[in-house]
Image: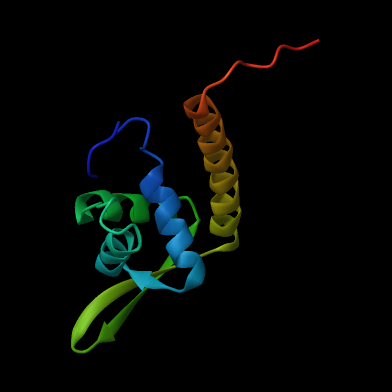
Amino acid sequence: MAGGNSNFLSGVPELMILRLLQDHEMYGYEIVQAIQAQSRGTLSFGEGVVYPVLHGLEKDGALKSQRREVGGRSRVYYSLTSRGVRRLFDLTDTWTATAQAIQAVLKGGAPSRPG
């Protein structure tokens, strides 16, 4: 990950992986490349980050995997389960609310007072 607070951004790889797999199944290195490409190089998670997240999501039932031979190479393809779709929606809602709150603070201005 390029720059930033790694603790704050610790859930980002999981969110990105789930979102990418919502569109279609992918293998690990393909996910690494897609995150970097779609974020225009701003987010760069190596295989050492992506594979543990994939394995954890699979263990939690959010993903399923299938090994296939492609072009003479054996690859493990991951896809979302219904639990993974729900997790993606929950994480998206949380991230959106957090991003909106941060944006509100960055814009500044006087806070509204209740009552």
